[in-house]
Image (cartoon, rainbow, N blue to C red; front, side):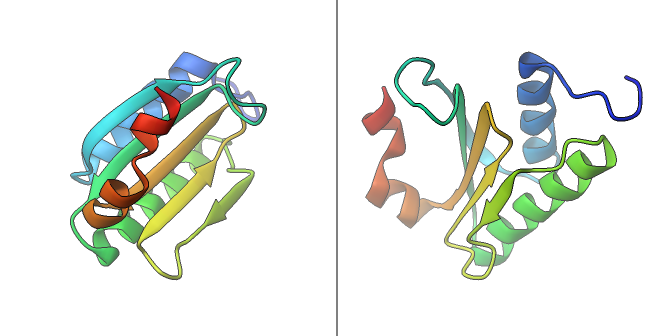
Length: 111
């Protein structure tokens, strides 16, 4: 990949999943929301074991993606660590604690 060149959609999804797995993120779900959402095509949802783990997963993902020139459009929730949202445009990543994930049940909303 050339400097400044963006990853294709499927490459970005694979990259994100690999980064999550690399820091022991769990239960990764890939939801295609094309045509259901006006803001993104894919939601990737995963779990972390604690607030610190959720923040660590998100920080690792943001740091590694910036090194590839894939700077997120927005990152929210790192201050609390309950639920961190990382927006890459056509891929939105939700890193959540189990309790938060069980409460909001994003998988059921979008499937």
